[in-house]
Amino acid sequence: MIKVSDTAKKKVIELMSDDGFSATTDFIRVGVKSGGCSGLSYDLKFDKEQKEDDKIFEDNGVKIIVDKKSFLYLIGTTLEYSGGLNGAGFVFNNPNANRTCGCGESFSL
Image (cartoon, rainbow, N blue to C red):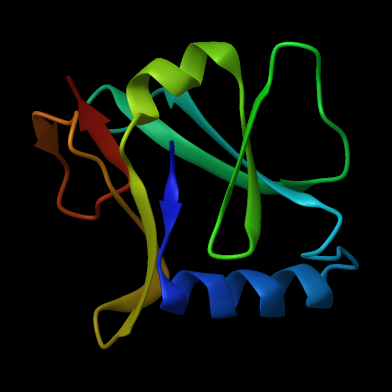
């Protein structure tokens, strides 16, 4: 399961609305792809459609879709949002990551 913090929920709803998506019917698609300075990087986008092998979660009123392959890397992850002085953006707190890069956008197991 993937959890969503309160601050991430507020930002997700705002951004989905700005991009023509609805937080009540549409999804956040979270995935993992090769790349980044630590070997794997996170991928996050909005989506209206579920694919056959997707896993669906809902936490804190936010619907999340994860493809089958990425799910193994993301079990137990919490999606958070940071609006600090060092830059604003979504942060993945992933208990499976052994190493992350300084920006928090890539990791390794």
